[in-house]
Length: 368
Ligand SMILES: Cc1ncc(COP(=O)(O)O)c(C=O)c1O
Image 1 (cartoon, rainbow, N blue to C red):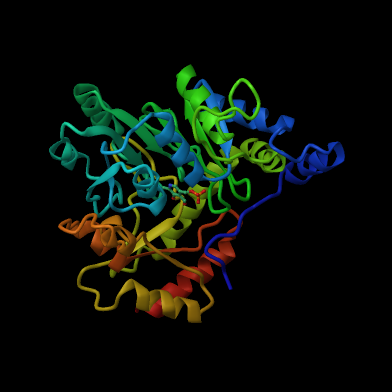
Image 2: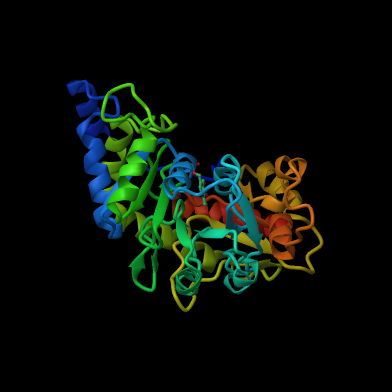
């Protein structure tokens, strides 16, 4: 089986993990935590970073750190992972959705302004699959309407928008370090900002909002701490970020070449006016006049021992939200069609040329 994602841990990961075990620093108190935080902050161009237990945890911290309140509204794409919307609904904040562009998979920026109401307090940018959202118009809108901006850069380590690193936009941003990400810590996440107060709140929220005096709490927080062992992996991975980005782009270019003759599928866009694809995953959509669904193709590929994943199921169709009375009137045709027509193929960092050729051969066999 060629797995949809196989991570590559071939740098100093083992050495740094051994250091954790040899020194006994295995909890969140160890030295790799601060090192990983300061190196990530420096890498993306932020002042502060808070390592935590997942990208989902990072979104919870970011939303709480901004002091968004019950009844506030936050605008975000429907085509994303549930972590984005549930960070809001858990606090009684109303997620207000926009559709996404069919070709870049990213939120339709021009649809945002019409969703702004007096209750809107923030916009959540989510970069999806490898291309960035067009950030500038969102930052301008946010300034005009005095809104906060959260940047979900969970999939975007090393990616740049107009030559500026993802993870550096808006008031607060987040990354995930799940093994399918460019940088992995097994499980893990990070919150980044350049405002000292937001940073202090993020760190306090991560650690149960412990007050000055131990065990006295003014607010409810989370235990979302990262362990020193996870941070050790992160430090080792970050040392190779340039190679990692290069490998991801090589995977993308390799598939672009191998699959270019398949005219029943849309291949990912290589460049836009503001970014070059980093191919977090190699995402394909089936053309409109192709009779079979993504689900049927994925099942055939599985028979050929090729791992795949479906696209996100849109937030406005999620049973859990519909049962709560949310999004019942919403219709977002592109997000719906992306789920029906889209899937991604093996594109983890350990992928070899030989494997890419096997994936391409299987796709040709299944589609032609
Ligand atoms: C855009 C986006 N945001 C948030 C997350 C959540 O990250 P985690 O899986 O680390 O909780 C993911 C996970 O893939 C993601 O793709």
